[in-house]
Image (cartoon, rainbow, N blue to C red; front, side):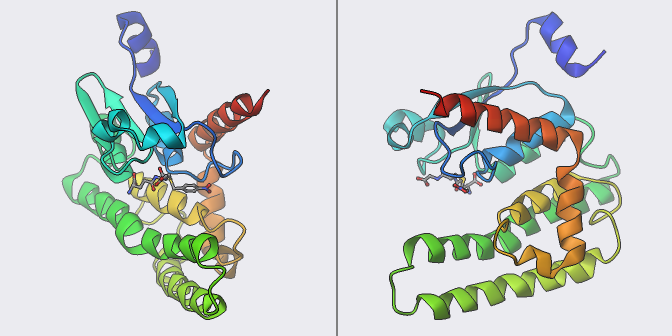
Length: 228
Ligand code: GTB
């Protein structure tokens, strides 16, 4: 019997996550709730979604959950979390499947989660800041080149480490989930395609049934919100 079915029979409700009421990504699943949805799908944990408008996100009620006025948040009984690293870790620590049981391999998988969030993602976010907020500056092109070169430096190292392997360290783990989700944010930039093994890595991750379910859920949510 699946964990989801057991929960239904026990009357346990799953966690609730907050998401953009209307995601600026147009349904491409690029906001950070995607990695939480994906982790929940991987471990078979049903969840509810609570949409939050940009205005509501900055109000005290939401800031109680997320001090920085952002999504996603995660509520489960008495527990409220923010920060996708902490949320995904909480999910994969409590459910089998995305972290190895062997302590050493488990620590290495967590290591990759942190690398994705601390070493790779900031360079990708920098590029988005340049594109969205600094386009009018006369140094825009120069800065974009610098920022993209910093991304390339990270991608080169990651590509060298991955080599011909399917995943970063043995079986697919939460480290891969986080890394692939971070790399997805480069979609449309052309940067990922400069590294065929990384492009294939992301495609492999996106082909996972759990990713497809999470992606479909966020897309259906976006489409329903867009209906008049
Ligand atoms: N460090 C936090 C975490 O990992 O949880 C960062 C959370 C965060 O950046 N949340 C963003 C947010 O709420 C949404 S994901 N922004 C609103 C605000 O700060 O006022 C970032 C994001 C947003 C939109 C797109 N997009 O449209 O493509 C992609 C990613």
